[in-house]
Amino acid sequence: MANKKTELPKIDSRLNSIGIIMDGNGRWAKKRLLPRSAGHLAGAKVIEGVLNDLREMGIHHVTLYAFSTENWSRPKAEVDGLMKLIYKYLDEVVAKKIVEDGSFCMRFLGDKSRLPEKLRDKCIEIENMAPDREFVCNLALNYGGRDEIISAANAAFAECGGAITKEDLERHLYTSHSPDPDLIIRTGGEMRISNFLLWQGAYSELHVTDTLWPDFGREDIVRAVEDFYSRQRRYGGVIEE
Ligand code: FPP
Image (cartoon, rainbow, N blue to C red; front, side, top):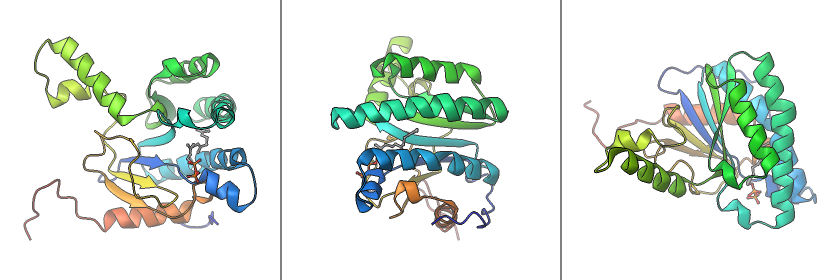
């Protein structure tokens, strides 16, 4: 159980951007003999507290994996429920937060065209409310890393008309406004990246916790940050001792 009294860790400029794979809602619900939708609802409820903590700690970019291009294969009732839940969350929580908290904005990563029209319009409205602020939350919605790379490569090629560079491609990624994640946290214990930020995560440190997303709180943030600072980032090189 998250303890609100737990002090947030001190960070420095090495940790500026975090990605989170929010996994384990279904198992959280199953343990309580509840429907999966109850797990998603509980998962939605912890998001705001986590964002507040990360911002207070000094993080500037957070990318949350809310719905992947592969998640459409789930039962229709679950997909419909998630779409409704995400709409409600944007409408009731996020819009209010953008108005009340002058440093917060939200951007969406993924192909909006497949989203229900009402949700797509809400995403556009939310982005237009505050295009760029000090604390950016990227919500990956109908997002897939492979699709993102293919469409960025095609767009860069069309723009350049020939061989493209890393910078040409990066200009066309959904994340062109945010730095690569220094740290990717995955809840729910699975040791995989699940098509999340495949390009941007090339040198991200990975922290996997068994905590299920609806139980994720300050103590988990502290553990993830400590784990990050215990690593030596070498980017394929060597550190002279
Ligand atoms: C994975 O857990 C989670 C998802 C596919 C959805 C994530 C959604 C939320 C955290 C809540 C709604 C989001 C917003 C932005 C309001 P799972 O269902 O695969 O869990 P399992 O692995 O235990 O089955």
